[in-house]
Image 1 (cartoon, rainbow, N blue to C red):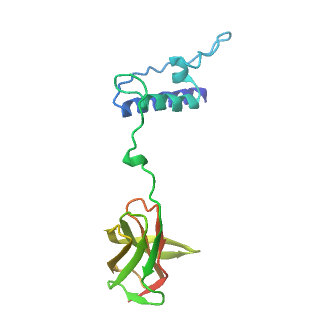
Image 2: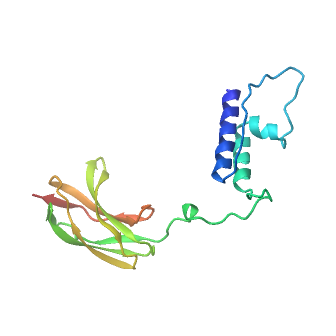
Image 3: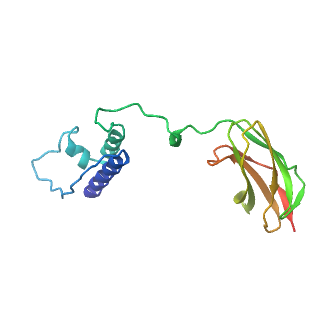
Length: 186
């Protein structure tokens, strides 16, 4: 188990170093602990290469925060990958409850959006036990305004009594809401 941890640590360091454009050469040699010898000090290179799993995280973090010239850590920049998720609410205001729609037919969907983000509109079908699944993206990347409206054309789907529209922030779906249940007929 210790050898597996050591190999995982070395791999994590190699991946982290490669991600920042550094070249890292690691030679894997079997460790043979001998009686009477102690572990290397925590700050040494050997500790980072053959220590416990926590040292892999420290080594990877150090490698990612080091400049190419090796001058030391620099302030992390906010990238799009680590941007904070959108906040606010979405409320679906149309279609109204109790209306049936035909497959391949069209109707208007409307919503209120306080996230300031573009939204996607999905058709969802009930799968039972209070769950549903996405069936089709019916409106991609709708406007980011405080209110929105779009013409939804339903795809050819089996008729059923429990369909809903999901309106959620485009791409990540971090904020979203669903409409009231409606039926799709033939």
